[in-house]
Image (cartoon, rainbow, N blue to C red; front, side):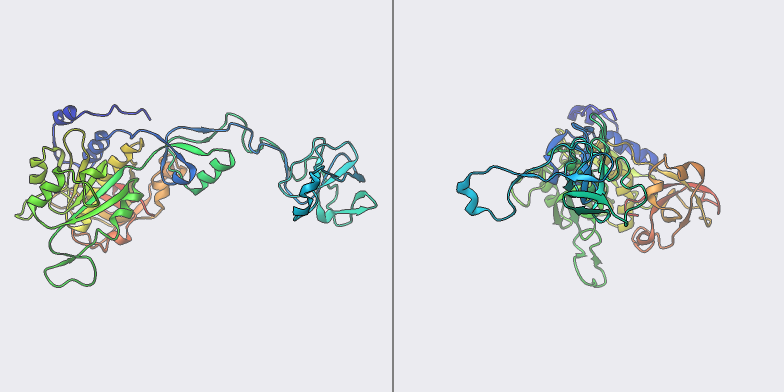
Length: 449
């Protein structure tokens, strides 16, 4: 993917605000707003979950030497074989008192035809060896090795139980592709190829501002109060989308405090702007009531609105802005849980993908298993697709090319409801006029199934 040129504050301010963005417009604008973060070289242990910035190529054959796949004997030619025993190695006699194991030996590095030497799994195969005879198939007698009656017919065949050098990769082979989200298997592979550090684009750093005077963090809330649906899961949700939450702050519905936190670069644990975050995600305060202050606070801070509301339900009050002087982006999520999750998928997922140098997250067409009625606007409904989102997320997957998956629209899909979303693996884009049973609609895959 070609890297975009980072925008300057002036260029950001010159861009018009997109008001009442459609679902696909919101995704495209959010993805175009951010540029890939610069690459960094990190030790292997610190790279899991990060995005590889450059291809990793083999600097040496893999494996870099021919080794035995079995305990037994390395043999040259046809048997029986004369057993070559490693010779004792010379050592400083002053150190013999400290010996704790077997005497040091000079290993056998080559074999002539008709010779054999003992070898263990992973051991270096001597030059001239043509096969490895596994231990249970050989018998030693007076320095002579022969194949016993337990052996398979014709054993050992040429090359049996030898892992040749370069079997897995030749010098110059691409081992890991740029853009890969590094997992434990990648890191293990990088380690066996001799890598100590990898060039990565680290996950963008994210700060959460969870607002609301009526929010309880535990237990069953009293009437008039609500349970916090964001604190227990939003950091992990952001992580699934490619971000890293470094700080979580809780604020009441206070304009002065919110404005101060978005404008004053305090130092310390309570700082928002000093956290070096590329993205600030807020919850609540995006509507137009007397306790919704985010838009006013952003205006007072000189932020530029990139997206001002979405033309759909739920999630329409969401916004995306950027603080002045190339400051962090601000993603304002509505206070209702499903509305917030919808907005996070439409605006947050593309933005985080762009930070990592990735393409716009793919969508897929699905066929509805039941009709959906018309509504006053486009809706994003939780849906359960009949196949895994692994297939949905990869357009090149054979299944994705040959058939249209079915998906069931789920009930309990109000802006404040989590029941339907808790069973979903996609968000279904339902047009304003509704959709019939068997009708085809766009689905946005969710990141966890």
